[in-house]
Image (cartoon, rainbow, N blue to C red; front, side):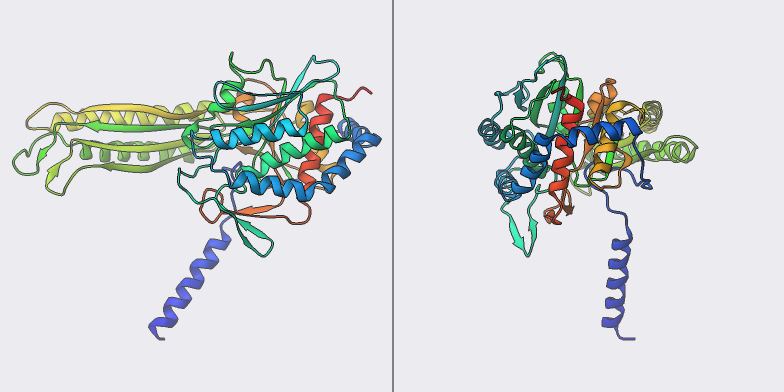
Length: 445
């Protein structure tokens, strides 16, 4: 067999292996077996009653009629960069669009979240509908959309800019049909959901600096109209840096070496973590994602660092694997300092760079049941899931919250080749978001 044929066969095998890997979306951080769930009869009847109101029927049709405008909003916002911690320009435009859509009031809070309020008849309850404005892409990334047939390609086009277009269209459809709910409504563009943003936007919403008590929270992330994320996948992330004097590899031989300590820390943590993650119980994961340090091959480094991530929807399991990391770091530090022949001891800096709380809601609570019922009403196949999204914060506080999808099909999240496609039923996710909002907020008239 020729070498060219061998390379072709290997390339095809790699492609097939890639295609066989389950697709994970922004809000789907752990592989799951999807199982269709059915809402309780009373919640299905509740959703049917709301959807059967003539004004809601008109609003559902308005969402279909607004598809071209929803897409135009989607494209407009995608092409406004929103790098981590630099969402201001997109936020300003989103605020203008919320005002134009008819919100009673629109403001930007101390974290940079854009919040629009629509007052309810009674105002005894507040329900929020949110999409996050930030993307993972750094400043200077080209976010101009490329059209390839019906598919749109651009960094951030799905995660999570599509959600912002959905939030706008829900508000437009309600205002055009003069729909009034019992509860107050908040339409939100949140900052800081991605990476080291560490959910800073939604943390602010639920702090003393927020808009007041939020009773139910709907986050839009990912595109699936089927999934109902009712469990928060918690995470701890650290940057760990061993520091020493550093020096010439020969002339200063015998100094404590930060790289040696880092290697030991990784070794000890992985040994314990491997056993821990194989035990029966709630799934927990760990990863050493980035390492660095050193200046040249003939220099003892003055520092060595790593960034690590661990995740679980069980706070207890998360704390357990975190303790293993801390113990491994201290053991490694002590051993390297004991081995040194000269010079000062190494020190270590352990910095928490990200923390997302875990949490789980009982699937039987009314809000989760309504999320299931609205999906079923629109002929979707609802399934329950876990994710690491803005919903983690309210879920961890015992506040009813779910994350639902924005519709269409997508892929390549967090990659430059990210894409989104209107599968001709993308509007269903927008209808679902509105129905869930109305059902939770109540319509007594």
